[in-house]
Image (cartoon, rainbow, N blue to C red; front, side, top):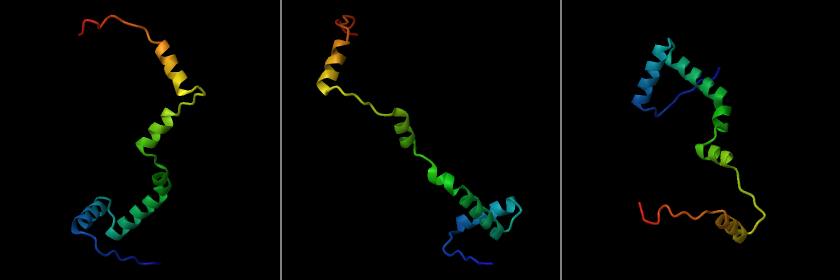
Length: 90
């Protein structure tokens, strides 16, 4: 069975790991193995997680139109209705 030595771990991280191991009735070594196995089992989920920007782009789709820009603007302007409601201001 392989052994692993971790160097350069700061004291705060070690204290958190020690506390977590104690709360789950594991040794520090057992807790590290548990966390590594858990991470590797979920690695696929982590890699496929989409960013909020990706989700938004998927929801928004794209606009496809065969008309020229000039024709689109012309159609938009022709669909507007004149209103006299704000001629005097707010």
